[in-house]
Image (cartoon, rainbow, N blue to C red; front, side, top):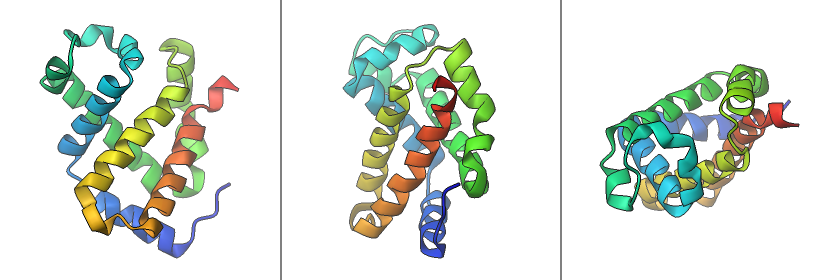
Length: 147
């Protein structure tokens, strides 16, 4: 089990309280699909993903990015038991969708870049430390069924 300080909890909660889920979710998933084009293979049913412009304008990608951020809400609400909170989702991604677990880290990195850009100078070193810790726990929980 991960130990969270009061400061880390406050930072993570603060980030989520200021998130525009539609904007940040869309930008993060789009960035991941554009920067790491091999991740597109899991989105074959989402239509035309042939270039950055089509990815950025794809409403299915935007909706899925929003869904991902709402999924992170579950981790926020269950910070003391993220591993079990994501057990079913981990199983889905490993057994049914066959998603390479490294893609969770890539998406987490893209999410960090987008949030840092949005927060600007408010994305301090302390903020990044807490945020990276949070995402690392989430990524580990999502990859749990692969081990």
